[in-house]
Image 1 (tube, rainbow, N blue to C red):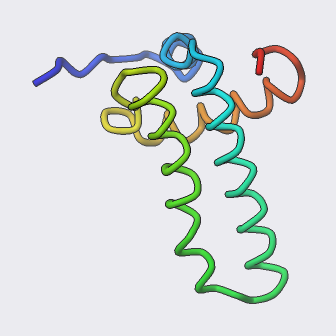
Image 2 (tube, helix red, strand yellow):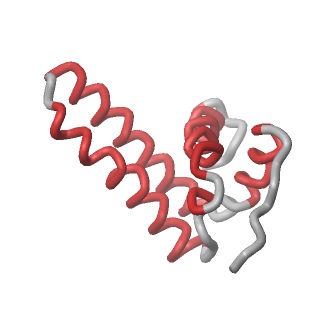
Image 3 (cartoon, rainbow, N blue to C red):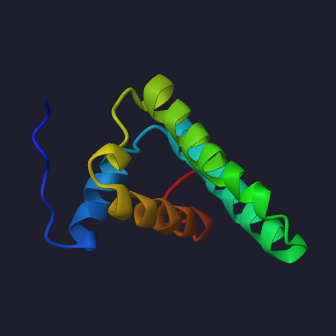
Length: 103
């Protein structure tokens, strides 16, 4: 069993999170998954199609985990730091759009 890495802040975790996403294909898959999550959430809310919300974890985690297991070849941080990882995904998404993190 791996030791649980401890972080004192999200900023400290985010540096680790970016290191765990050094592969560009993994980052791109995260971007696709997060885009789908945003689209599904918006569509489900706009149309009242609440059953679509069941697709949110599949879209988000599905693309991200393919990126980690097949391209990054590491274990997703979600397993040990679920809340920081969720926030990290949206912050990385924003940073990719702003050009702070490369596609």
